[in-house]
Image (cartoon, rainbow, N blue to C red):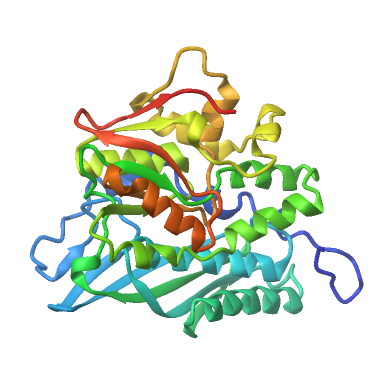
Length: 357
């Protein structure tokens, strides 16, 4: 259901923003250009993870058994319901800590709202949804900052902790590893359906269930020595985040398109043209490093770059342990978890085999 203002007129949060969810991210090409001249943090010996890799969070080692994980993530509405928007944005931000193998301990809210356009009740709903997601992760919203902004923006800065030995970067995959994806792809397609008024209640419920499912399994996987690298799949799509892992690890990634899990109507709607501009932007940024099989339909290529909001984890692990780990992930509440590819020696790129469906 859409929220209602005091005069009973429905509002659509998505109508106040030019983009939504992780599709708002700067394109990979633009981001890479902006960061190219950033100085490296070499003098800081305790900085275990900084800007050198495209990792999900920064990590600072305090002592032999404790490291602090810090991240921030925020975006514009991907859904119209304020509470759901808050839940999704908070879940997405917390995911960065889990993707590093850590446990979140508290969060700070980041809020920008066009207060002359949105009722106060809607903004309260967003904050309440974020607090609800944090409570589900067992952490408080301990503070934050807010501004009056032309478009609605919400997210969190999240602090977590981990044993330094359990930190999992996206750059430590090994040749011969298998790749596991823990959630289905298609959030960008569903977002496009929302904007066109085509998302029915069942599909909306599926979308919210996926995007509010905490990636807490990452903290458990990091304790397993068979798991070498983890990242979460968000705005750059499956191909973009697989490419980041390939580049960071100095390896080639192979993705079997026929093994990739999708939300129930993602394939149908992608074939019908429900593709986001962010998907096209992703291709423009890194498509030259993606090798596609001959004859792959364009809608399939677009699905593989579909921007995910609060997507799943991409896990690189020993091939011999992949089936065991995949079963563990499914049993923990991620029913679509699947082995989708492998890593091998070679120039950093992503090679796609097979076709969807």
